[in-house]
Amino acid sequence: MLDAVFKALADMFTQPFRTVLLKSVGLAIALLIVVVLLLFRLLEWLSVAGLTWLEVVIGPASHGPLIVLDWIAAILLAIGLFTGAVMLMPAVTALVAGFFADEIAAIVEQTYYPEEPPGIALPLWLAIWEGIKTALLAIAVYVCATPFLLFAGAGVVLFFLATAYLQGRIYFELAAARFHPIAEVKAIRRINRATVFTGGMFIAAFVSIPILNLATPLFGTALMVHLHKRLDTRRQTIEPPAMGRLTG
Image (cartoon, rainbow, N blue to C red):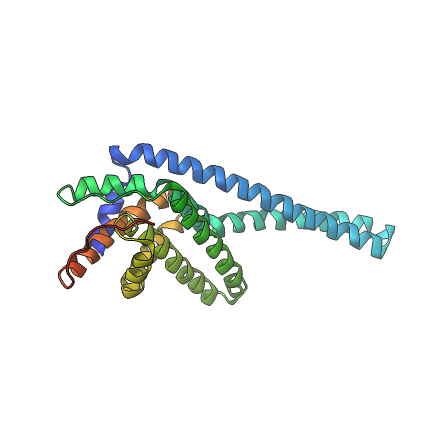
């Protein structure tokens, strides 16, 4: 596992990866800006609507105190936007991975496994759809996990474990789907859930580092390509080799 992690880290800023890195980071920033703007509009609307309702209920005499409350709401809005951006970063990078996973995986395969048959790229729409599903699942999980952040360490641990599961799942499936049909990929992931989850913990740690986490699609895909190769080699020593990746 550590060997795969170090290889993925070493590859991220090498020449073959730079073009993909720039495209991946650019798309991640663009999506993050869109998400932050949407969050800003939502929270701003809630703030204005709430203060307007209070002034109507309490009366004109409350205008002065409500101005102070408005400033407090603006500070909370800024904190909420920052928190929302941090929490949604794993979902954003998972969506970005759907666009570039095959390009990244192909580079890793050509670099480290040139003697083996290359994987077959997923249709772009399918890769993006898998990323969208994981991003939506991540948002749902994070919304459920957010209240537990009030319980200090317990909430942080729960959030990290949820991120590890989701990140390990999406990146492993994108890497493995180049060689197996989706149903088989999910079966392989379930059989090796502990290994995939451990890999997901490294990705979760990576995605928690500000700025650097914009490169999560490269690190996560590269790591899971190495991991899948090792699991597939182990599986083929036990089972007869498959006839090839099915489609459909």
